[in-house]
Image (cartoon, rainbow, N blue to C red; front, side, top):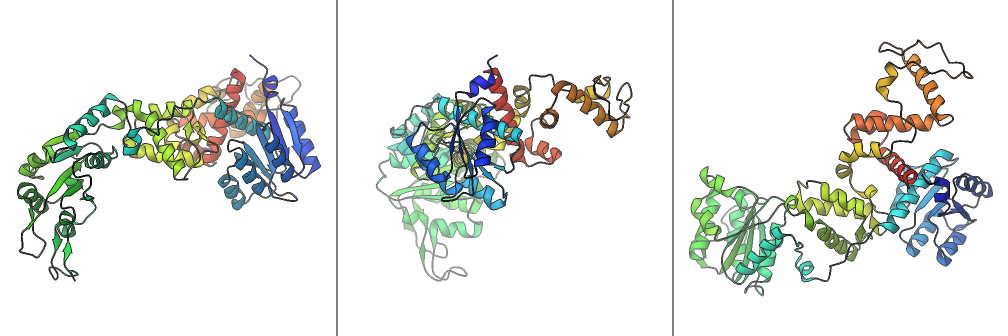
Length: 517
């Protein structure tokens, strides 16, 4: 096993603070861990060191300094190098401080006077994040391909079948029924059919049938005459009239009422509509593409959907596969989504680390591509550099890895299993008098002081001066394991926030990786 101190000697930590004593004391703590130390007495000097390079692997910086503040310095530094890991130091831990620090891209912040163990643990975690940013392979970009212009991404065999059917039906005027789970991208398919059709130069409108109340949908689709109902103060053309010689997309058609279905059937059969409250028959030339996430065949059997309309709609059918059926497309989808976010200036991260991508590949994706899009957006916003790391993924994706994290971050010394505390005799060092006289075994009926006496003596025997750190680690790992990896519940049991718990687990995992390297 390699020496962690010699490993740390590869990394440089820049300390930016106008207080000589802080720079000295913090430098000594980090030097003792093997880190190379550089110092700057002001924000301006720190910026100059980052500019002239080589860039430090980690920066500890005070928020309140003479000259420009730590927050201003942070912004200047990240404009030079967006991947810099910066930990801010402050004696004033207000909500505003935390919000501003994280908003401008700080890795974390620590309170003064600082706890050396906390500083060491945080430095290790931040260094590992920097290593991940440098080491994680970047995906080959495909954003210039034609698929990205369409918004349709996927090289899986399931999606290739979808593309083939689009090519077959696009140039015709045939009605198309698009089916698939919610969030699979049915509207993108409809839009792609329109863009490649002979009607591409004509109008295109999408109507969400589930979002319009039953008493308004007929007016929305077919228009109404003045005075036909309360509030109809003027004549209004409906979507079918407005889409004449174009295409209309009826999304969630399975939610359409039976009376409205009858009128849709007439449009498909005869190309005719009547406005609400009117008697005039109006000819329209509109291609219909419909979509639903419901089982229309079952609805027909249960008389909830007109059978004749179903057969009119189901001339060509395109089933969009669930994301769980085309997981090999996830890297390309993520690439596309990140490219779009960066282009729209909604995020800076344009890539994802290998372990974060592996987590996405394992997840079942009940919400399909829409859910993936939300996850990518969340992760890109919280990412502190140009790459999304494991720590940036939402809790819901990583919570089921909680038990893995406990195993990966187990300390070298054998842990003290809680179950054994009830039965194993307490070892009492010869040089240490116990706080009380514990019984030969701490049984189920032991009092809390007896149990703590046993725990204290056992940990002190094994860990020396690291009692508090060791017990904290064991309690956190036990809570996560006890809740089956549910970090929200574990945090509640421990009486800490979920973010604090996640930070601690990240630090444990970072230390474990460092020991195994």
